[in-house]
Image 1 (tube, rainbow, N blue to C red):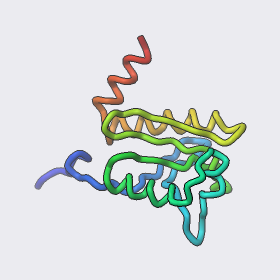
Image 2: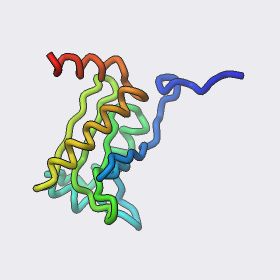
Image 3: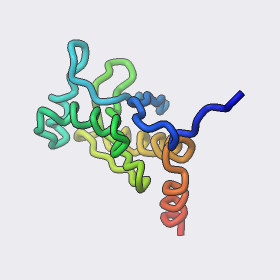
Image 4: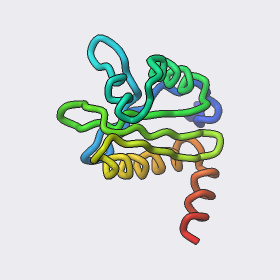
Length: 130
């Protein structure tokens, strides 16, 4: 019996939900239940197609992005992104929510170390510690 395939053997990841303790990370949404676009405007993202582009980037394994949400309301407080090719993690937060963005970045870093780009994340983490 063959074991599970490693992520690099399985392109086209679906958005992965991550529990970051006080925060909840999920894929960006613009549907009948949740519309992140108004909160994204607060982050300086005025492109109405940003959510669709984010989903396309997940599918093409070129960039992963998460809405960093308040657990009880689901309100988007920040966005964190991961470039799977380089391991680079970036954040942007609504006013007053930089702590949520920082905590989310650490959770994404742990996710990436294990699942997505371990060699890039380890190299980037080691260079920051020096």
